[in-house]
Amino acid sequence: MADDQKPKRPGAEGYGAGWTALSYLIAGIGIWTFLGWLAARWLDIPIGIGVMVGMVLGAGGAIYLIVKRLGT
Amino acid sequence: MGGLQVLAKGDLPWPPSVEEFDFPGLGGQPYISKITVLLWFGVAVVILFFLVAYRRPRIVPTRMQWVAEAVYGFARDGARDMMGAENGQRFAPYLACLFCFVLVTNVWGIIPFVQISPNSHIAFPAFLAVMSWLTFLYLGVRKHGFLGYLKMISVPPGTPWYMLGLVAPIEFFSTALVRPVTLSVRLFANMFAGHLILAVFTIGGFALLGSSVVFLRPVSLLAWLLAIILTLFEFVIAALQAYVFLLLTTFYFSESLADGH
Image 1 (tube, helix red, strand yellow):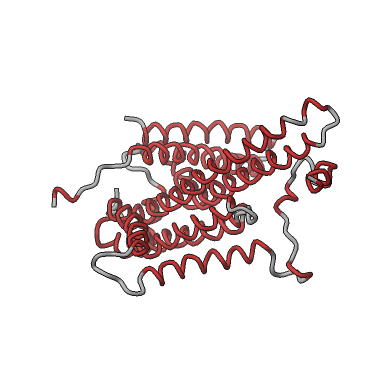
Image 2 (spheres, one colour):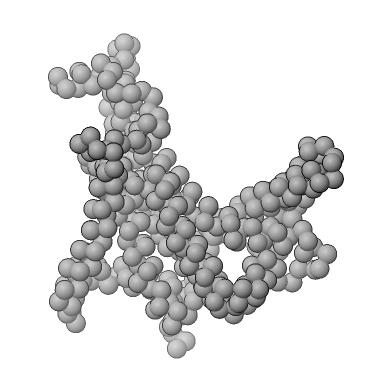
């Protein structure tokens, strides 16, 4: 059924890609901020340092995932 | 003109605030508000539409049947494209109902004298998103097993092992927890902002009309003209957001049903 295939919807794909990127950034920064906070409490170092390192790590990981998933 | 004068005197709250979205219970009781009634009507419209359209199906469809088939076919074909004919057929009724319900409740926002969408209260989009969320998690766990699905949503394909510790929590968090949030907030925020924009231009027209600066009074006509144009624009947003909700739900289902990566 080769003629049964519909053309893809390019607009919808771009929209989805944008939301994928945004949710990676939210998720990345969110989860690693939390993990950094936990680690800082556990290791008894200033909370700010843990949170800051977590945020940077999370943003980095999110960008890595975005490039991996959406980059050509 | 007397009514306009009264309105222009400033009985309307200006600027509009979140209180625009609070509706008291009808007739003094606390349970049923305008939003509740609109919700019931929305459900009734969808049910009645499909019942009436399919009451006596013909080979050569009547106009209403044609519309119903077009809407259903739209949801079904989108699902087929993404998850194959069999699964697409399986989820088509749910997806078509979801699309129609969101569309009708969105369009309440621009019907004259109704002009509020239940979806501008986060509870309704949130519940719809939770239904989609639980369904795609369930489908994924049933298809791949609990651990298999956990691996599938946590480990991006082709990631070197030393990156896994960093990206696996992100991948898991974004699939399992952020998705329902973005799904519901997107619909809610669009409807909320749309209502607020229309309120600003409409009530703003009255505020300008009652202005003490005479030159500002004719500008109210411009404000109302813009309110009308933006109402048409809101219709596009209503349809688009219903489509996006359908599209993303279909996409999430299809991802859970896919054969690994």
